[in-house]
Length: 107
Image (cartoon, rainbow, N blue to C red; front, side, top):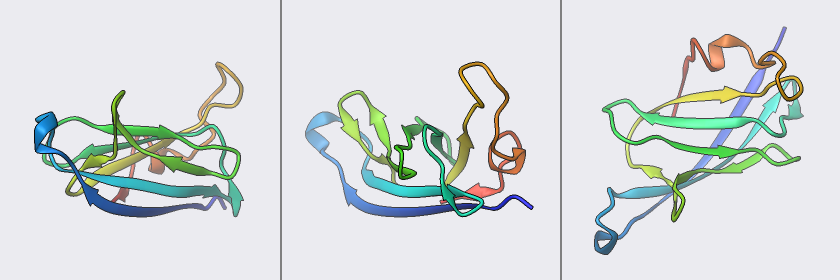
């Protein structure tokens, strides 16, 4: 049995001067079968539409989402979460489909 754990920590922020939506800083840790999942792509897509945020896990499974090249975080609200990690450079995705193509994760 494969188990995946996604821990999320969020804080509010944002700047009207940048003409951005209100953003929350999002960090977390991803594990697969109890072990940190490194080099995985994490994507948060707002369920109401709009721009997604993404990040990549480090060797400890820790990630921080980026809204764009200049701003960290994700739009405030509920998101569909996907996690992808390929086995090698062009290998298959090693994360079960229920966490990416058929994701059941929300945050």
